[in-house]
Length: 300
Image (tube, rainbow, N blue to C red; front, side, top):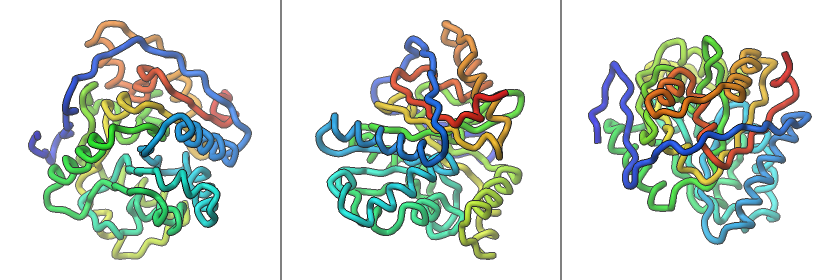
C-alpha cells in the first residue's frame, strides 16, 4: 500500500491482473423526458442484470442528483414485498466519501442514501459497505473496503454520473482533471479544497438534508475525498450513467458533448494525457455503457 499524502493525490493500485486500454467506444445517449423516467430506466437496468445472473449482485450507488429518482423508487418498492428477492441479492457499495468524518454526520453520502432509500431498503439488502470515514487509518479501511469488493467478484453495475469541470472537461466520481489517475488505480485519497467543501454543503442543504451546526463544522474540517478510480470503472461489468441536471449545471451541456465527440488517441501515453485532462472520457473505454440524459443536456 502507498503512504497517504496531505499534499498530492494518493492512488491505490488494483491487485491482480493489470488492465490495459482496449478499443474505445462511442457513447449513444438515451434521451428520456424527465428524471422519474431516468430513475425507472436505471431500475430496469438493475432488474435486467438480476435476470441474467444467478447469485449476488454487486452495485456502486451514485450520489447526488443523478440517481435520486432511482433511490426514491427503490425506497418505495422496499416498503412492500415485490422486489424483496432482488434486494436480498444486493451487495451495495458507495463510490466516494469525505474523511475524516463521523459516519452519522448529516453531510455524509451515507446519511443521504438512508434518507432517500429508507430503512426498509437497508434492512432487506444482503450487505451495505460504505467507505469508512470515522478512522485514524484511512488507507487500512480503504484496503478492507476494496478487498471485500474484490472478494465478491467486483461490481456488476457501477451507477455513474458526470460532473462539469473548467475548460469543457468533466469528472467521474471524484476523478478530476489533473488528478494523475492511471488505468490500474482502483481508488484514491484526495486532499480536499475549501471550494469543494462549500459546494458539497450547499448541495446537501438544497437537496433537503438535515444538517446540524456540529455536522457542518465537522464537514468543514474534512481533509480528504475518498473515491473509486478508473480501474473500478473499467472493471465493472456494466456502467449505467445518468446526466439529469443541466438546468442547475448548464456547463454539462458542453462537457457531456465533449465526452461524446472527442477523438481519442490510440497510443497509451497520449490516451492517458487525454484522460487526465478530461476524466469524463474514461467511460469511452468501457464496452458496456448505458447513458441516460434529459433532452436539455443535448440542447445548445
